[in-house]
Amino acid sequence: MRRATLFLSAAALAALSACSTPTVDGSPTPTNGGPSSAPSSSTGLPPGVPKVEHPIDVARFKQDPCATLTNPRVEELLGSRAEAKRTDGEGGPSCRWSIPSTSRPRVHVIVSDFGDSGTARFYEGKGTTYKVLEPLEPIDGYPVTAYGVIDRRGQGDCSVALGTSDTQTLSISSSLSEANIGKKDPCAIAREAAIRVLATIRGGN
Image 1 (cartoon, rainbow, N blue to C red):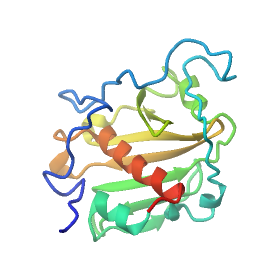
Image 2: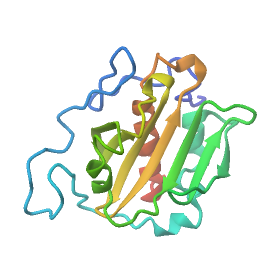
Image 3: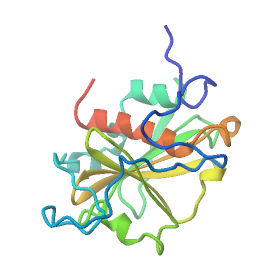
């Protein structure tokens, strides 16, 4: 049976049961799975910032950020024609997957160079640097946070920070195909990509 792709097939993504509930404009609504706003003296982290109990060392992926997704997982997200391109920027080494000769759909993973405060860096910028800052349902205990300097969810774009330790994150962005803008939640798709990234960096098959 051929694998349906999340972006290109109309029936490829079922609604997430415990992540975020899309509203009319495609914005995610956080659930109770997000971090608490109460201070926690035991974690040593600022109030509201989720702790990563089982850190993953992602240093090796700075050498090859395109190794954060396997070909089968890219195919699940974008289809068999997707190609990878290393696109390093100020944020750190990164890889972008897209369909040749098109700008959409695409997935972009950045192995952050800001390895000092992890997810806390995003929470510290809430309301200032980041207009969008919303916790999504964690993935197997690893925090996922939707963020954006500007809100582009209505345009089919969303970025999430996947906390791999208390001092490191991976930034995972998704852009919906033109046909799916307004029909699918781009942050739900970004979280789906984060699920596959996490499985890859943990060595899952």
